[in-house]
Image (cartoon, rainbow, N blue to C red; front, top):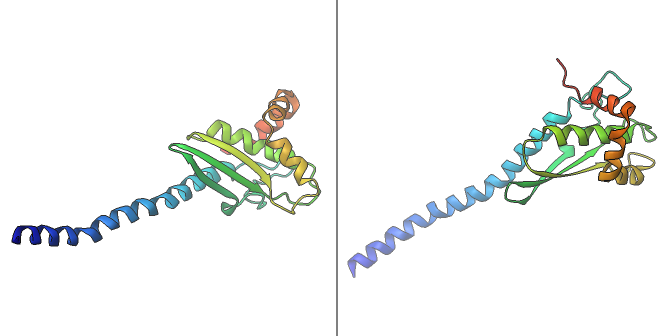
Length: 160
């Protein structure tokens, strides 16, 4: 009986330790998503604006808080980017979205699904642009245009 009592006491003394393990594993998940979001942000912040000599970060078109990463399955993530054009009638918003997509498709080191949106209420035709930049066929067709492809290449080119 004394042995059972001792074993029971030992097991109870370990419960907080075991509970801590589970909590640490659960707490790791948001930290991993934050790290992945920062990894995405580091890739897109250096993209150049198509008509200005500044980066999207410098113009505050993208910010750390505009990137969200969610786990879909093990080692498969949903990356959501919400960018803010510099003016509500920006004629190059679709091109900026295309640059974001191309850069991430090329450089993101983990398996992902990518969704890119204009921040709600920041552009006069945001719904139409959101459809365009998330339509694989339209993106592929746009990248077949040599003039458009050259502009995208210049925007996504890493600075020296």
